[in-house]
Image (cartoon, rainbow, N blue to C red; front, side, top):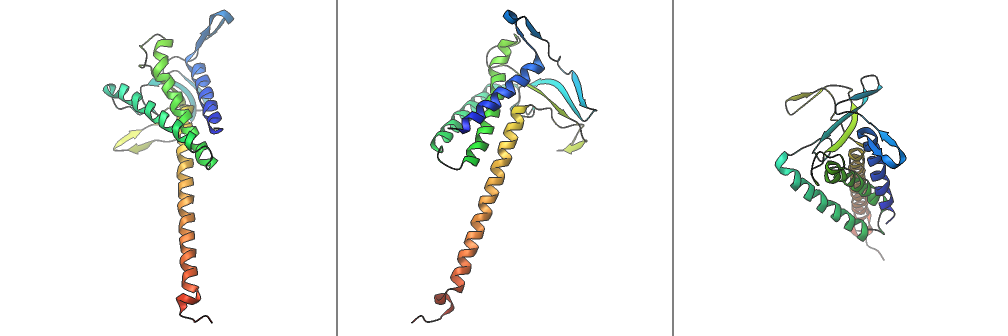
Length: 205
C-alpha cells in the first residue's frame, strides 16, 4: 500500500497550506497566526499569481451544486473515498503508476472533505459537516468565455484540487497510452496473419 503514503503527503501539505491561509492558534505555545481575511489577496507575481483567501461549499475549484446538495455531496464523496481505498487495496500488486494517480485523487478528496466536515466547528461558524473549503491559489492570466459567461480569471483553487487534477490527467494519459499500445498489438497481429504462409496460400512441405 505504498501509494497511500502519497495520499498522506497530499493531505498533510494541503491542510498545512490551508491553515497558513486561514490562520490558527496554539495557545500553549503562544502561537497566533492570523492568516488572510476573506477576499484578502497577496501578490506573488504582479496580478498574474496571487494568494486570495476565499471559501465555498464546493467539491473542487469552487464548483457548487447548491445549498440543498451539500450533505448529499459529502455523502457521495465519502462513498467515493471508501471505494478508492478498497480499489487501492485489491490492486496493491498492480501497475504502480495507476495506483499513484488514484492516490493523488484520494489525497485531494480527503483534503477538501476535512474542510467540509471539521472547519465549521474548528473556526466556530457552523456545525459539523457544514464547513467551507478554503481556496487560495489565484491565477489571473487571461479572460475567457464559458457557457456564455465571461470570467476574468481562473477559479481560485487549493492544493487538494491540484492533486485531483494531476491524478485525473495521469489516468487519462495512462489510458490513452494503453489504448494506443493495444491498437499497435492488434495491427501487428493482423500484419503477421496476412504475411504468414497459410494466409498467402503457399503450401508448406
